[in-house]
Image (cartoon, rainbow, N blue to C red):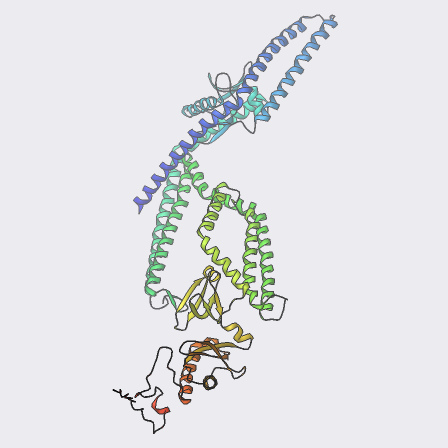
Length: 625
């Protein structure tokens, strides 16, 4: 475990050094280039201003010399020289004010370059060039000179001094110039040249003395001891945390079949006992390694923070966690107004839907009646309104969603819209057909219908399909677009709301049978059939007079359209019985009988006991010679 921790720490330090170095190099290159572009025009102006300043300075010096050589009695000449000096001083003040205004305008856009200390910390920032040195070159040169001060064992708080030159103040260490501060540096920092030079001198002195203190043998021994203590504590914590999670792992396994009996939702077993134990032990392992990583992540910044060279690594590591958390927290805080707007919109539409749902229930239960609006329209109308309101709610909420103005978010939305449009073309036609069928009220659940060649009872109506159960218990799903394009027959509508459904069947009988007898036989058969109504009375129609037979059609009313198969079967049985009882043979159209020597086709139990089949008749004709 110690080797693993050491290995992890070495890798983390290497990665952090590499990332920091690369980031700083790229940043410096980019910043130096940008700064050069921003200040190029201004630097050209500074040259002209500086040239004018030198000329004014020479002229001012000459005027002061002339003024000092004048006699006290030459007042007119003295006043003229003083007036010229005042003009030069006013021009100098105006020049400084113009320069300050220009620098203030560049302050937000120009890039600064840090002078780094001994522990990769920033001592101060350089904004402008000096002589042939760019701001970047100046920062690098000053950093290099400051870094050499750590090797001066005689360095003290009195080692650095400030020397005033013609146009700058120089911070020197003996004969070595550490840096020069110009008028532009002072304006960039909103102070005077002398005050800025003193501030930089104190900053550099403190940095050197602090380095010597931090790198002393006593300090290093203390820091190493503290780091070792942190590592020991980390190892002990990792050991006991590992023991704790091993104990919980064994406890979970021991509870299999006791407290852990699997996870069930109603009658469905989501996880049996063994799988639930496996899931919990796996979760236990994930949490264990998460705690390990958390402890190491906390310990590394503490160890890095003990040594001045690696203090920035500690801030970087903590920044990886705290910076995203700050961004998340700031994002949530800034998003709160939009979130409240979304919540208000949601609740407005929610309670609007509740009100519409209440009206839907009232109409369904026929407590509320609207002229021309049927109760069975209530639910589909509510579903349509709900979809429309949700769509409208989403349109209102969309601009308040985070990232809704992002081109990527908008592109994905358009792409999904195309997918939905082209992928659901067939489904949309069925949905439209389903809505139309609902408001046409062609049929409802439980109706006996005929759709195309399919006959059965409606068991389901949805926006996409209509399902029919046939008399053979076959479930047939018919797309709503097919229902719309096919002719359909509803057997139940008139049976429920009118006199009843007329059931009919046709019998063909020969011309030798009197039609009155046949009418009576069919009426008797209808009267004997259980589910046929007595009122309205059944009736018989003679539908055709064909070559060999007459077509008799019996018509009778019923209120049970879903039982047509049984009714027709019983009716046909009764027609056979009634015809046999009346002595009517059902022979035509495809059945013929020769009476000469053949038995009648009526069953024997309907015939007299004395009945005998007729004998063959033979007629002989004698020919005459």
